[in-house]
Image 1 (cartoon, helix red, strand yellow):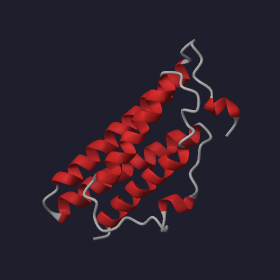
Image 2: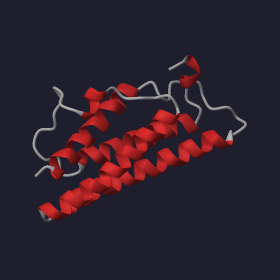
Image 3: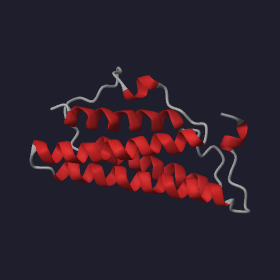
Image 4: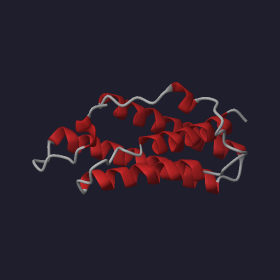
Length: 138
């Protein structure tokens, strides 16, 4: 990452930047919907299907971030000290989606350091991923 990653967007409204913001927004919506589906799921089958769909959103999000040179360390998505305790019933994915919304809001308002909380975002995304993994492996 370079200092330009933390600068506010150029006022010109670069089309490629707008596409990235739009794609990240779609990821946020998908993660929050997945969280809602996990919250409402009554059966293991419903939780498993919602989790599989959530995997798609996480994978797409990681792809979008990688096109911008942002990669998360592999421990974020694997075992860690911050392992999810039991089933969080979708809250971890909702929190990841909410984090993306806050990050995008800062970025589109031109707030300096919009990506400064990337560590928190990695934790939230890691929690979501582990929640999805736990639901699929049941």
